[in-house]
Image (cartoon, rainbow, N blue to C red; front, side):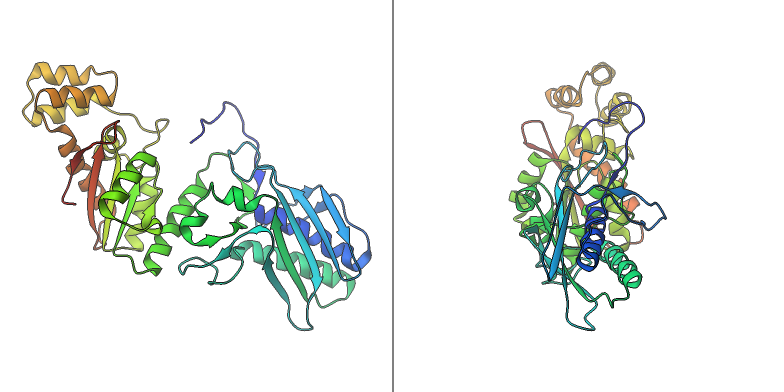
Length: 362
């Protein structure tokens, strides 16, 4: 995750907001011959931002407009992506229908908020676009029966940097957003992706999923458990985001995999494992080692370690199975977090070289 810059951060706009603005501009031009530029829309919470058009065009039967997405100061993969919308007249009484253009994905797995076979345009963007079309239609005395085709320049390539392939969204990006606003470093999109990954796994009937803190732990855990891609949850630092969702959306068995430092923070009770929001507590770790039989001298060395890797090395040199105890305590925290849900939880702990150094009953 990118480091959050200092000072007040600039908010941005979701792909859904950009698509709504482009749709409104294109439909206005289809009916009147003129593109509003900038074009203003109303977001779900009442904000009324304006968007400049970067491309536009019109034929007798359709019109299109495109907007460059500005994600503000958020490190969003779709920052500066071009969101284009083509509007064509639909059959009488058809209302607003949606199609996936180049760079927008199609849903192929159950469990997402959009049906299989539909373009990956989430419910709130569909609602926003529908309301914008209705507003323009009412102003010009037309029924608003249109076909909305959304495209994203280079969207297929950008989608490879997202969860879409794992979630079963093929061919491009999703058009997302619940408020229309991107709040920098809110991590809301990541946590939302964790939730959707769990939903897809549940819908696929998976009995086991694995949430991992990083690439190495994910690769090792997937190979150990022989799980399909869609059963692998990119938990990252958001152990709480995954476990709290599982409490109400349980799966039979969940395996948490991660590096020693991250899992030690979970073992101590931290549910956000990011270095900016929780730290490895070497005093606590030394106390754990002492409970395992470490001498005062060894515990003092662990307490004075510069890194979690050094603490683990000191423990290993002195035959103190610290990683195993960390795995057991992390398992306890995870069970406590999902209290009330019938979920078997196991924990895998890896060192910096990717070696499995601690595990519960996996």
